[in-house]
Length: 287
Image (cartoon, rainbow, N blue to C red; front, side, top):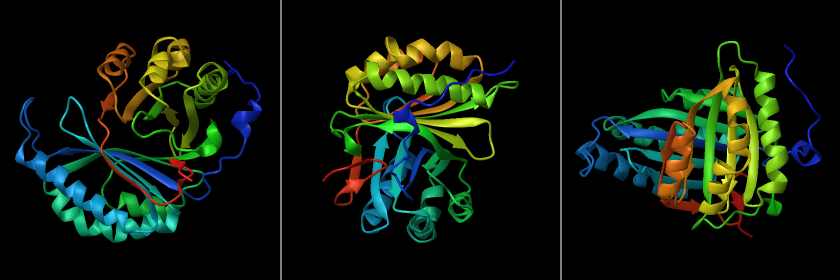
């Protein structure tokens, strides 16, 4: 069966303005997780090590944005970096990351990392893979960014980064089509979905989807009445979600609604963050 197709809406077809920037969003868990009410020693050391890495990253001019979000409901942390360009990523992983890797891997282990950019050259991919990190590298396909790429209010905004992988027999072109439908309709009916981007994963029949919502109410609408609710069944026929990373002040209502949609989600609270003067095109400008 030939997958459905239609031309990209003009706002989805506009070239991305993120330039050479590369974003990395990854999950780390302690080697010995704690209980429901008390964190293990490894968990506490993992969090402290990431705070130390965060402090060092702030002094690296090639790191445009860095953030640590503590997971809610599980012993884990989501870490997010935006690099100026591939060279900056390689420099970071050969210096700051290397300096901390021994101490970090003594108490924690990496899980999936989702990497996004317009193009991710081999040296950048190799620098990250050399750290024994499970990673998916996505290159920009289509999308839109409202408000001239301005960063939404970090006190209320929620960033969602997900990986969808085709089922056996699933068609990547059909998966692209359904996410194209999401972006096309969301642009007009979901005013608070201010950023929507689809990235094709290198070497896999998979997509990375990145969305930015102005606040909890906008994300709630997306999940219950908006395009996520409308197209989830169509997408489920061709692909399965491998991971959903929610960064920001995620409320318990969002956690409930996303569970109804059977999303393999990691939820976080708003954590330590730093952005260089002016911000970035990937996370949002601040001028």
